[in-house]
Length: 179
Image (cartoon, rainbow, N blue to C red; front, side):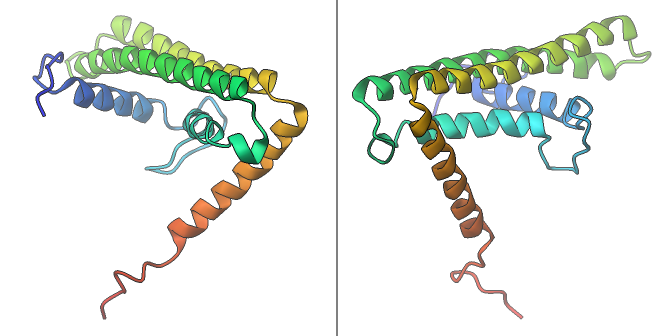
């Protein structure tokens, strides 16, 4: 697949964005905003809520029959998901750009703190915008669903997550442990 390179390193745009987003998540993944600590490889509650919102918005749009959604509600849910996805991508690109710049600045001697501090502040602001976008998207969903539909969606989503987790943690019969 030929992707146009936008990054100075020659990486594909997707690779550049993913790398930048991961760098941003690693920089701010310690849980200092949420008051909790995360182990290596774990997401803090703020990051988890953004990812969960994206998954929830994808899932709920496919629940027309179980939730008794009207065609207009399904259309509005799709619009909410698209808006959230676009906003997330825009913020992710900017976070990646700043994280890449920050990485270069931190790699110099001496580290230019006068440049590093504003970059960290901006990354923090962007992370807040991303969290607010996730919460605002959920508020929009509540605004188009009846309260009974919202409650049923929450219950069904919890069941869906529990089922997914149990499937993920079940031992695979295809690859039994070799002794």
